[in-house]
Length: 415
Image 1 (cartoon, rainbow, N blue to C red):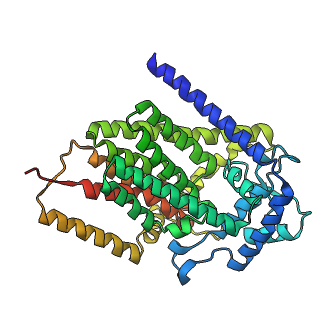
Image 2 (image 1 turned 180 degrees about the horizontal axis):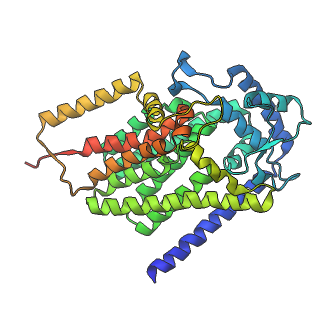
Image 3 (image 1 turned 60 degrees about the vertical axis):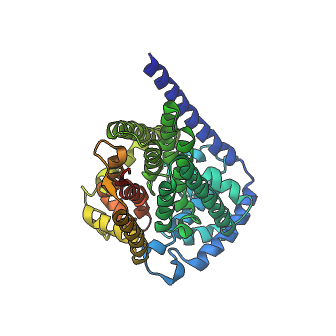
């Protein structure tokens, strides 16, 4: 009876969040279009100057690659979400595309107010528009970057501080080192890259606050899965489960059996909420547009590499795609940084008496958490390889869980 009662409550909450998400899209679409357009024009000029895929610090490594391709598309979709003239735009997700160069398309759109939408991405929620469109009424893209960066580091510092309070200094240090490895300067200033990190940090904060309340914890992971699908789709979705769950392990320090039970339940809730939110979007697309929303599922065979890619596109093997993501994660600078940390740990193990953590402890769950993002990248090999310049950040959860595993694998013997 208890389980049935909570299942009903979870379903009601899930539906309420979905309705609120759709309503929020509609309301933000009512914001003044002339204000949005004025800042869109200024933003388009910046994209023109920077190019479609600029690199920071004169580097040619994908770890320092900025995705203006996706950023310009995000602004494009936010601009056409004008529900005063087209209420169905929150479902159709219209945009203007002139060929396959989104930066050029955005510039043409800024120069010609008469251009109408001629493309859509109706198979995604694109919930980021609820944030981007209000910001566009106030400022151009270059100022939005500053707001994103400030919010990113504020949320990160809050998450790290609470993790230090609830767990220990090692957990907070591992989180900080993980964020450094994933190049926060670029992530924090990107609409595309930062979204999953915002949700992941919020999840860590929620876990720190609610770790003694199991029912509330499960709600957290349910909402994280649902909101990940709403705001993002496949940039680095696994981190919104992986970082909060690894943080939970560091706080509770429970048995392996309990840790595995929590892993299965939280991941199951997260995955069901993530998939269910996408399924709901397919239903809305089918009902309110002329498209068959479920046709997108036919692409699964392509993304996993079962079917051949389109002509002119490289076909990636699972290991080839993973190697690209690993290369972007473990740059020479990151290898040096991680090596210094590992050497310091080894010195500590050698200078103090330590013993291996017994197999009954939940520390071994970290290894499983670290493996799951790798499996994700291997299964979606075509997407992982083609978009390795941003999908490598899926390994954020692997790095954090891996660092936690190494730092907690040995403990000092009691005198």
